[in-house]
Length: 298
Length: 298
Image (cartoon, rainbow over all chains, first blue to last red; front, top):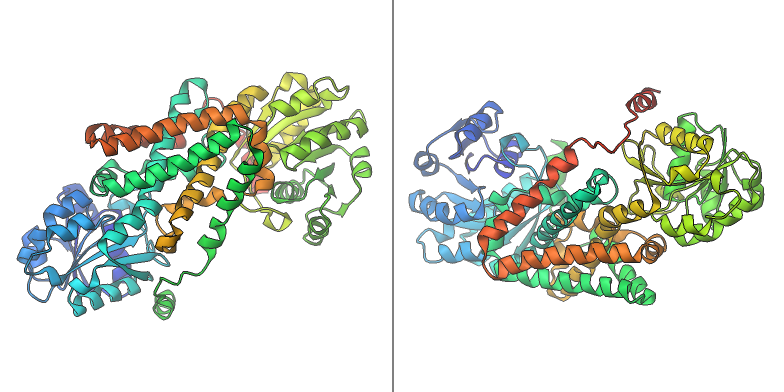
């Protein structure tokens, strides 16, 4: 199968690696407005060749859009304008409501499957691409009733080849959930990084490399090019999530300030429940264990 | 050398493993009020044997206290009452001001080296002990002028054997720094875990396993037994750190709410600087590269 990837960065590059090694893609075409990234992606063997945008999307089986969400808003309608009737189009962005609204009336809307594979690192560009980045992680497929069944099936098969579990929800639900479990942690990390940098004059920075700080602040390295438009497109839900978080931080701070040690103990105990949630079974997931096993043993 | 470890959990157990494998300790004595932990530590070979408290500290070269900081406040004076004049005592706790104040006038104060090896995981108990937990991490040694030079030297040698870098500061500086780089990230993770659990009714929890959430909330699994007394002992500095953090979160939220996208971009850009800080050189550290190399190649 011929797969065209628009955006040869961390996500697009990592997709390319595993789609090739799993045998899902036999031919990989790349598109990137950044010429250095395009050349590097060919040099690294992520894609077979790089083609101009129009040529790359016109004659292919699957178009995968893996660029910042503000750029996806511009590119997706153009892709849908150009594709053959049989081509499937999907995207990898972290926000979905504005995107699906923008193509709601497009004549090729059924060719498009809005998706969000929940994996990544704080690094970017084709050199950041990793084997197995998506394995064991979750992919969200949105508004499936608005896509053609064969297009849904192909995107499901792709995620299965990557070793991912799939969850189905509306674009609105995905933006609301993701605001809490992905966008909020990023906003929290950005704010934490800014908070500790205030203390630089006090020689405090020196020990940042240790302790719990490193994992908590890791996401603060993430690029503004990717994250700024995500925050813009999911403004109201992220503000809701930040308000909820700030409320809980204030509660924690007030317990400490007021020496309400019993309540503080309760807050820690309640937070500890996250262990069972993180390690537990999730009834909302469609587990693709058979596929994952096949993928692993290939 | 004979080493007595009080508290055979994650920290004490991991210390035992590496102090033995590096050859620093030739005999390891354990003390633990939890009989299951004590038995498990012997079974796992972390210590050679478990002895009653008095016997264990009376005839030994080094006493290492690795228990929650509220318990350390009670135990340390008793240890100093019992030891021979030549024995070195150190502790592994995350707070130091209250502890050093509590033994300031003890006749054996010079035998005590207040220390804080900055490493750990969110797990606890002897089965959580790990090889190499401290390698490449930082240890803080506090108020060194108040300890005898041979006791400082032995504790330095111990940390070098563990492959750690050492930083020197006052107990007050350590509590202030640690409030920002360790206690604040823990408080932030506890509050984040509580904030997202509010959303459980909306099926949002199901996708917690993916995205940036897992690393950001990891610390929220940490035990209250360890963390509650840390927050109590470092109340004012943690409140200061939380206030700074809440201020930065509100700034981020207000940018989003007010659609001040230019300022939002600036906040992300400033947060990104943490990458250089985390990956950069630190002039405050005494690097023990030679020792680390020796340790690695052993």
